Length: 398
Image (cartoon, rainbow, N blue to C red):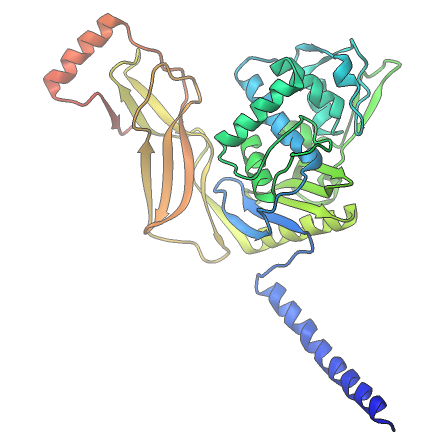
């Protein structure tokens, strides 16, 4: 036997002996709660707390493709909440909106479609034409709408996102990250967007000659228990992307994967992230959404006392079987509150701590409009407050 053959036999024997150990090590890694992913960029967060449960190159700037539409949907949902837009309103479709390529619901120039149906067109079928039609309705032009998108990016304090259009079609200088997309999704989920993104199929213009069948681009809503959104994406540059959310056992998770080569691999990566999150962690709700925690007394307000409520459920998340104890709750109010306050306006935050570690932080809002008091009421109340030596505004327990 030659030396080369002998060396090959020895190497082969080492590999065969080592392989079971390597396989065992991988199984041990998975069973111990660790996780790896083949996605170039990925993140998994819990929605209420924003806690990052897993991340891999989550701050790498990449093309977001149609996940861009989450920001478009967010601005549309905010406009509806502010009553600047209604679901029943008919939107006139411009030639520009109807000319969008890629995924579309085949809007015709001059056609009128309700905001609700356009929302379905974006949320279910990822219609680029529907996205631009809504953008033009809100801001006049898509360019002006993009300015609003980027202003919202700054408001959310996202450092690695810039939008150039409302649809996600390829554009120079348009980029985001898995982390930023997760934060946009977290904000979007404050609104009833899953009423649309959870629909697997529907019809537009039903009964008409140009009836259009909508089929959800996110197949996981049918195959993974609890998935009810949010947004797929694909371009040749971005490859396959997905921001997905699932709600199980009173816990909502958000995962983002970007730059994956195939739909199958993308869905597999998302499924593995969800499996990890639901298998390894649990949450406990300490305050319900909309629960009053304090009363705000404002000297200059028409109604002196206004309830402060949680904008979202206040939860903590922890590894299963390792629930934290000795928790503390803090209420932090903004130093300056300018009247009038709109219903739903943020006035502070509810912080849950264990020692010095912040486990959860939830916005506190006013659950009714707070109007300014009349001059007579203000003077009368001021004299009463001065007589009692009270501060201009204070917090009182319920």
